[in-house]
Amino acid sequence: MRPPILGATVDYELGRWRAVELANHVLEWVLDYALRRHERVHLSAGRALELTKRAMRATFGNGGDRGVPGEILLHALCRQFFGSDTVINKVWFKTANNDTYKGFDGVHSVHTPRGLELWLGEAKFYRRIDQAIHAVIADLGGHLEADYLRSEFALVSSKIDDDHPHAGELRRLMHPHSSLDEVFARVVVPILLTYDSGSTLAHSRVCPEYETALEAEVRQIWRTLNDRLDGRIPAEVRLFLVPLADKTAFEQALKAELQKWQ
Image (cartoon, rainbow, N blue to C red; front, side, top):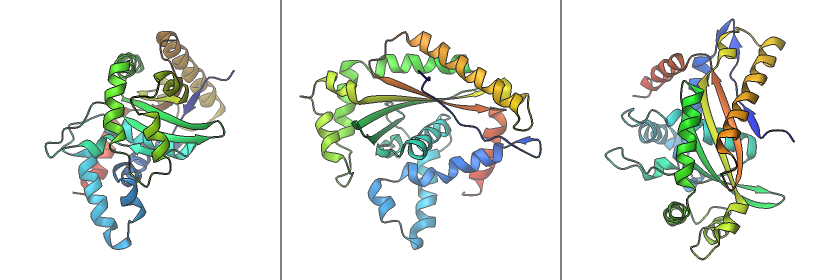
């Protein structure tokens, strides 16, 4: 059985790891990430700039939440590769003080031939992969406990837009009378981890040697995570990895691009 891994890379250009391109990709997804479904549907050309600026402010705020790039990448990969629909997003809960709720980093639904799946995502935007794994396991241990999950479902179900294509089914699944056994049979946990990759840093172009080294690196990370989880997650887990050549270079590129929106 193939391990459930998705590795997303930005590769190189003229011998340079594409930090700026990754920063721009993150920003390209901000509108889709930050706006509610009805806001996206009714987005007009005349309001595009206004809504984009508002989305940038709501998403990045004062810059205090350093995990935001990872959350946007999680959102983008779920949408791009699995055709997910956003159920709720953390940014919708932000207050004027830039506070946010501490639940799942992304809640999506995915319609499959087997039926509707509820994706409860976690993202860790880290430099060291060992620290990212440790942090995500700690979060999952709390977030998938019965009492916590019930309280999250009460909050999430109240925020589901009426025009969401699966609103009724999602609310039924999250209803207090629904057994968590039924819920976990429909849950997928996508885990996104960024990290400074030795394989990515050691190369300057895409070549067979790079691909071989990166595949070995990614598979080892999955084995480490899977061993640490040790079957304790009562749901399907998918691992999304975004290997970076230099997290600091990416953060600097993102900051420079964000300044253009101020």
